Length: 107
Image 1 (tube, one colour):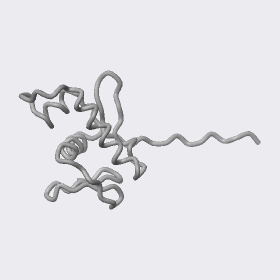
Image 2 (image 1 turned 60 degrees about the horizontal axis):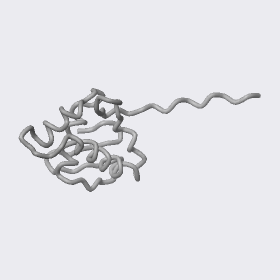
Image 3 (image 1 turned 90 degrees about the vertical axis):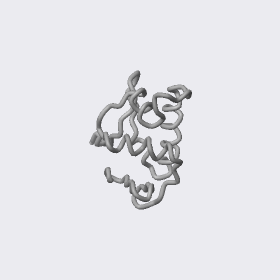
């Protein structure tokens, strides 16, 4: 599976940015895979939690925020941590943000 610079090999459970491997735990991979399968869609914390950790888990929902932080930290050296966007008071989405064009200066 591919989304811009991000590639996930589901059979080998490998992830890479621009061909450079990411070392992910099982849960990090599952979370990133679910985000990738639902790219450019807002996913609530509850959706992410139930899909990756399951409904019968005793862990609190804030684990989603913690694992998003872990994923961003692993994507940052590749300059790609911005691909996981926070939707305030709702959840997260995988979306490539387009940098704004610089405004022309005077003169």
